[in-house]
Image (tube, rainbow, N blue to C red):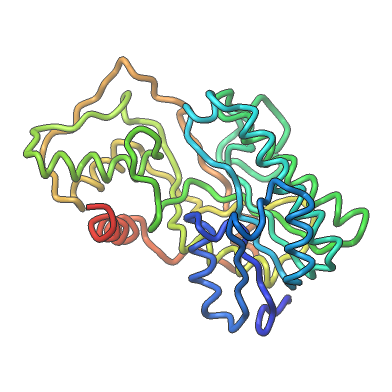
Amino acid sequence: MYALRGKRVWVAGHRGMVGSAIIRRLAREDCEILTASRQDADLRDQAATAAWIGREKPDAVFLAAAKVGGILANDTYPADFLYDNLMIEANIINGAHKAGVEKLMFLGSSCIYPKFAPQPITEDALLTGTLEPTNEWYAIAKIAGIKLADAYRKQHGDDYISGMPTNLYGPGDNFDLNSSHVMPALIRKAHEAKLSGASEITIWGTGTPRREFLHVDDCADACVHLMRTHSEAGHVNIGSGEDITILELTEMVCEIVGFQGKIVHDLSKPDGTPRKLMSADKLRATGWSPKIALRDGISAVYHWFLDHKI
C-alpha cells in the first residue's frame, strides 16, 4: 500500500478532463496537490521541467499531461503529436527520477492497441499488430511512455506504473462538433436538434459498432486506487468492461436530452472498427469496479453542459 495522506502530489495536466478529475478525487486523500501552469514550466522543455520538479519536490506524480486531439488534428500535425508527447513524458519521468519522487503513474490511451486486437482487449495485446493509422503518432508516444516507466523501474527500481483509460466522458469534455469524440458530439447534436425543433438527427454508418465508455470521475478513482495498491511493470486497463452499440448510445442520449425525433443513418460514412472493448479483469482483480452507471453519467454530463456551454 502507498499512502497519499500528507504527501505532495503533482497532477501534471491538471487543466485537462482527466487531470481535473484526479484533483477532485484527491480532495478526499488529505494530501497537498501541486499543479504547474505553462508559465511555471513548459513540460516540453527538459531543463524547465527538471527545475520545477526539483524546486517543488513532489512525493507522487500523476502524469496526465499530453497533447491531445481528434483524427483531423493527428493527421494534420503528426510531428507535433509525436514530438510533444515524447518530450512531456520523458521530461517528467526523468525529472521525477532525478528528484527522488516516490511513485509515478503514467496515463495513456486505449489507442495503444493494434487496430484488430482480439476482443475484449487484454493488456498483453500491446505490440502484437498494426496500429490504427489515424492516430498512430499519439499511440506510439503513449507506448513509449509505458516502456519508459518500465525501463526506470527495471534499471533504477523506481516505483512507476501505467494505466490505460478507455473512452472517457465527463465534465470538462470537448463538445465542439468538429473535434469532439462520439459521446460529447452526440450530446451536443441531440441538444441542438431539440432546440431547433428538428425532426431527425444523423449518425454515421449503421450504428452497430460497439464502444466502451467510462465516466472520468470513475477513471480518477481507479487511478488513485492503483496508485495506492498497484506496483508492477506493464500497464493496467482502466475501463468499465462493458460496451454498447453506437445506436443504443444515441437512443440513450436522445432520451436523456429530450429529443424525440428520428435517428437517421448516413450509410455513406464508415462504421469504423466493429468493436473496441478493453478487458477489465486485471483492474477488477485489484478490488476496484466503476460506480457511475452510464445513464446516470450521461445525465450528469448533460446538466454540466447546460451549465457551462450554453
